[in-house]
Length: 206
Image 1 (cartoon, one colour):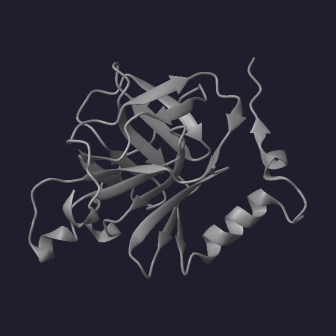
Image 2 (cartoon, rainbow, N blue to C red; image 1 turned 135 degrees about the vertical axis):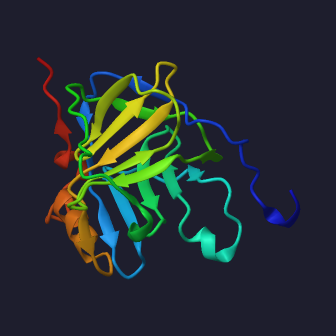
Image 3 (cartoon, helix red, strand yellow; image 1 turned 60 degrees about the vertical axis):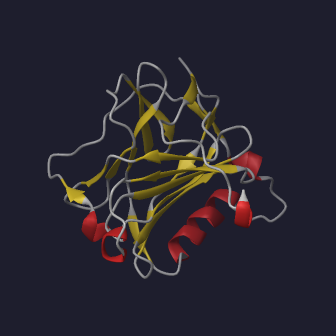
């Protein structure tokens, strides 16, 4: 394409593949960057960035309305594993729901994203009154299944294996990514010679 622009897949849903039970527990955490007015959700262990999915609300085109429309991005590796989630919509534009609670799935799942370099239409961003839990609605489809895909992250999928929702809990306010850096350091371990693989938690399946 002219100007070096990347060609995006036409708007649609985010197809995923689910494998249960997951063998390795993934860690995730939400850090709201106060200065930047956006939410960072890193996952660990994380591979190398390969592609992305952008979820944006259709409609607003003026500069004033661009800031308050829904903007969510998912970074994924070559195998479709989630690496990082960014919510670029400032918190003051999220929808508050005092009765919102994430589901409580039993199964841990290995979720792989099959939709690469795409732009889809996001539906909603809802947060609980205490601001430590958020629901990202990525599709209008009905939720048929919910899974734990990382510590503090739950995914909801449709019958035809589309990613419909993500719930992120235990979100903390952060400044200059200091808490996020400390969280990553703790997971890597203090010993520089220790392999990150030793910090993985294998899930025991009864």
